[in-house]
Length: 258
Image (cartoon, rainbow, N blue to C red):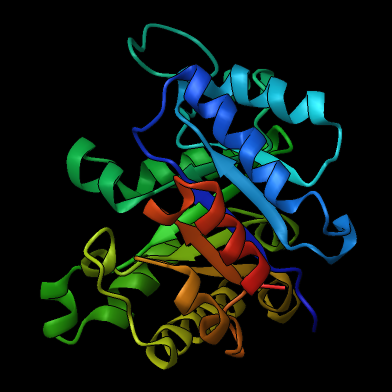
């Protein structure tokens, strides 16, 4: 079946409020001459402190070509959780998507599969879209456990979700060894892993959900890699890191996915 591509830019810990608004406006300017219906689903994910500023830029434009994601959110509604930001809060700031389970969150902040599952449930409960990240380390790849490791991540993340909620979700496969390193997973291998992920989704939630769910590739995605990646059978877009920090390169990736 035909799945609408998604190109999501994860800005990570970059850009102050004014810089974030400027970049959002620059991205929209790059895309202004393209009909909205022809575009992929375009998403940008600024830091928490820039959510309001970016949402205002997107709203003031009124073009509806770019949506906003939060880079993370906590699963509790409120309480004594110093430093955390709830899904309700990022929704209030204008986010329509939330990235969860990124390897940097797992590695540096000790996030577990159980936590990611709780986040996915809360995000879907509030009508937002989770972008669920998964991926293997270089050591895991060399040990030959890529598929089993990622399958376990996906099964844990989707545990207890309805087939309908699974179909609404987005998964991003990001081999850890390719994030920010300049190394890109071979597109055939990326497609193989993503097809494997789709089979896991089929096992967990059924064939219809597996057909509908969008699965992205992430890991040093650049303008010169996107066309080949998008030519593959199971790659439905990209979660872009460094190349999303300049409007020109991000727009080239968006156009390459059309």
